View 1 (cartoon, rainbow, N blue to C red):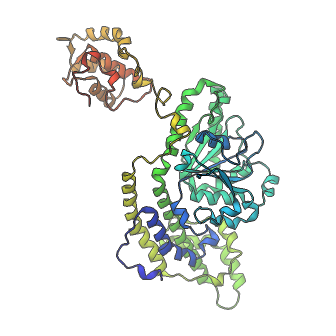
View 2: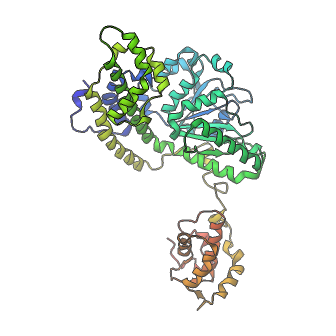
View 3: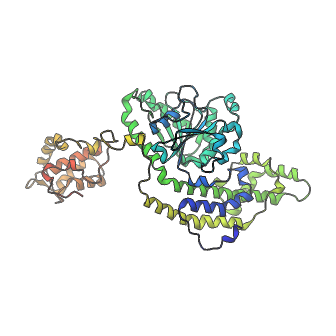
Length: 532
């Protein structure tokens, strides 16, 4: 049924979500189903997985501020919310948009076809009793959904008493969310065994991972440096990759800072994190596309592994002993497949986990290699995905302002409390006096030592003075372009003062503006020069 369509002309898709859904159903799902992908790796995808809003998963030990972080983003309490120093959140709570405020319990949630949680049914009642959806009308939730998780505890006792596989549930969410935020408490940095296990379970999703070092206002700058160093060292050991995960430092709640020394740092970090979260709706289609490609690569490897094991099985006697032998030698089978089909070692599933799962399988029921199913997936990766990539760009261009709005995201947008307001090139933006005028007497002294002719200095004379700043020529060239307001290739005393002011801005660590802001235009030039 599926294979008849393979040699047809390229299909036309109305949008990216519909394209992904159809490709999955017609080309990838048959391969997954044949080679038991869903028993080994991940349940089949539902329609809701392609249509749902971007999701943010919050993970952390208890009392790291996960629930408070959500409240800070939305600036509103949500149903089922509990905050305290002890382990308060004992449920997975999906915080989603709804016209009416209320709670949907887990068992009802997993039968709702409009929600992307139906496959969580596999984790059983012990989990479903600890899963709920909090719905409320909130502008932030119009663009994203947020998943709050139980605080991770330390010690074997707590892990056993959960009654469900906590790491496996988190891995299920990690596959489907757009951003994973790991929260740490700067005041009591400690990574328990269970947290280490959880981070390792999220290992294949480092591209989605961000780290927040929360409550950083409770310690001094010197202590913060030590805590940050310790965190990076610990994460390096657990994640075990040369790349460093992005860490955001701050205090993510609406209370006064206890130690305000690092206020500017916290503001800049919060702004960066907010921009990262705000970009999720814009990049949602690209993330779903990327996840489908990852899934397809793993499904191909699964097909080769299962068919290789089937091929090695005897037809009559010694099936059980051969099964044990094949499981023990799975590493060698991996190497053989890798060489035969030119597959990267990074595409193979975890060896120990695969061996464990194979123990419970009947190898005689495995399918042999069916080239047409693999050809369909190869065709999807080679041709269909490329067309969808072009559609992603078109969709992004047609809706340029897709971003998260409302809640805490509004507070840093504009006005005097916007990030960087009144600093750097924005200094003096709401003052009547020209801000450069404050230091102009100092700049004038230098200006007159350069022997101006008709009240102006040449480019060569100005260059010699500007080079003393030791800034690169590319930066000084931009400063010259901004300061030469009348574009005559010379600088008068006002323009020379402006050039020095912009040098000072850059030396203080601020960025130069792309064009000269109105408040920096010398009073003598206002109204006579057309700004770019």
